[in-house]
Amino acid sequence: MPAGHLTLGRRGEDAAAAHLAARGYAVLARNWRGRGGELDIVCQRRGTVVFAEVKTRTAGQLATPHDALTPAKRRNLARAAGEWLTAHDAWDRPCRFDLLAVVEDRGRVTVEHVQNAFDLSPGPGGEGGWQPW
Image 1 (cartoon, rainbow, N blue to C red):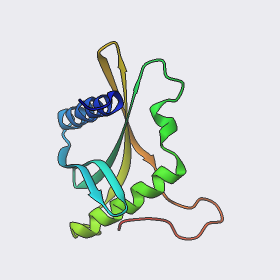
Image 2: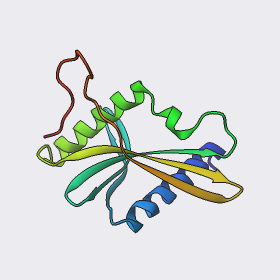
Image 3: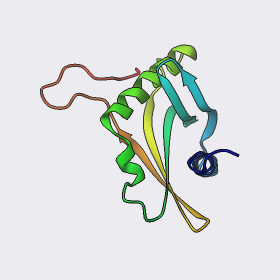
């Protein structure tokens, strides 16, 4: 039997995928792995590729799902997204990074979908920025 956090994570990903599908997103891949890391859900809607990061927590934890989207995690997601875009010859497609924050409370699951949860532009004074197009 898998560890409890793995089971919770799987339930969260299932809830997130169902949430996306119910809102018209076509799920292209789940748990896609490249050398740069893993993408929880890759989907598309209206021509935009969406790299959806799923963070699942139980109610009452001090750390929220949003807290887990650290700068290092963002860099890893960008690296994996670049690999996915290369593998699917999709660098010309618009894309974005979304967060699906899933919270489970006594068997009840809520999903918060944050579109454009982050971008990889360098901000003031920086050079360049990660853009897939």
